[in-house]
Length: 314
Image 1 (cartoon, rainbow, N blue to C red):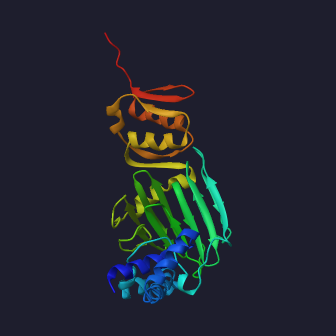
Image 2 (image 1 turned 120 degrees about the vertical axis):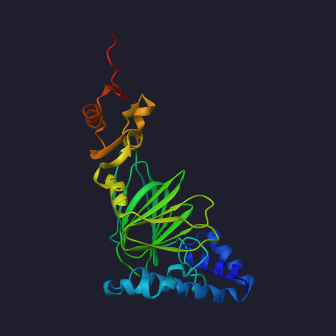
Image 3 (image 1 turned 180 degrees about the horizontal axis):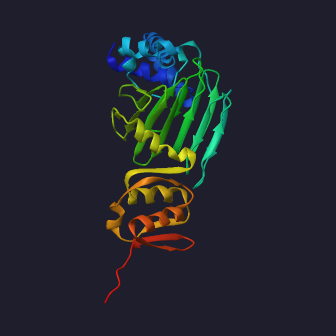
């Protein structure tokens, strides 16, 4: 049997809960070859072992990922969560679901029924669906930070389009934009993988990130704990700048406020800034610029225009 069939089995093992269309596809795949059911069971067993590795007892964390590194890429083949196909399919009849959308400037803290908490950033859209053996979130757009309550029997899965995230008990952020998806881990361990039918599953630990781009087989992975903490300052209603450009700062403020910052002089946008600012107070930010950079600030109901102070002519 080809590696392709094993990858397909792993993909089905990761998908769950199944909608009716997927359910029929799985039944057809199982019926096409009597060996497929065994492959699926092996993939499910491997996934169960992975979940144990993702949330071991505190004293066993180092052993789980250092002594057994093969678990880091235990499954190849990508999908959404567990499929319970060979032992009985589970559909959507018992789903507890919720849809949340935030507007511009809105940051919402959403307690979930399992004890987890989702902190949702501005202009974001997500759906939460809990079934008997999994907890699933579909992030349509935007960003959310999840504090996941531990439950080894019900993994927590986030579907972000081109990327999937799986956790048992941890804290992590998923940011979905037109340019791609970024997953950052602030506590514990998560598994990530590209959606689709190829690409390896990758384990991320606290302080690490993975960036996914459309068409990519594997994400860009790195370690940047300080940068991750600063990037998540929005959870406290703040924008943290550390040698960031004025242009970047303006983009961040404009995501949250209807009164838009406008940098009149393009060269001014390259100025580097350091500081911690309140997301909903762009006028205070502009006042700081006026004092530190000597710029001119013009305020109207819709805009705050920033430009270099013109020298008097003689």
